Length: 277
Image (cartoon, rainbow, N blue to C red; front, top):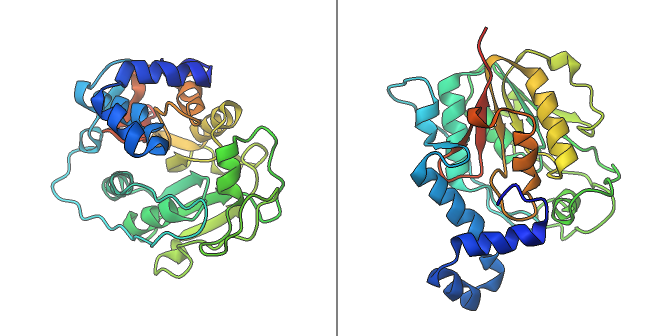
């Protein structure tokens, strides 16, 4: 059902597949939140069943054996438009992956506030470099960007009250005043035209979280597969989503063998490990 192209049909099928009394109660108490219910229930189901269309595993199970790992998460208070926080379980999963895999090079497609960039930087080795790609200020937003993506791209710095314009404005990244900012290289460009060639076969972790329409996700995934070194991992955000970001799952499965994609627990993160030479 998640692979159905029609958003309306997909949402109807999602309700049919996951509806129960709690959904009815949620519709009464918070109808806006009810739109997210089918996706949340389905991802929880996948984490419990473990294998139904693709694999779902706890993040610990996809990592090499480790005894003890200390992770660091820096939380910033949210304010302003379009600043929905990254769930703590997702930040914790990214932090643990980074700590245990000990990457030397990370590439992130889609900086936004810089929250995941700083999570990578806080948990990677001292000599690791985190490259993160964002649209430059003043960039014109493509017409086929989803409305929800347009809202996030146009959102001003926290507290500015600026949103809804046609161009990306100056961004204030949350890693700027941290003690790990020196690990992060901010890159600018549209991932559809950016030259990724200097990073080919050299990145340990590639995190794909840019625009969410099919063409963008597929292009970003193809670039990620070229950048990641043998034995490295590609991670996608907004995976297994019934709503606006459903194109993520379709683009991933059209690019990567489905049997090798692993949803991390009940999160919207999915991981693919490339074959080692």
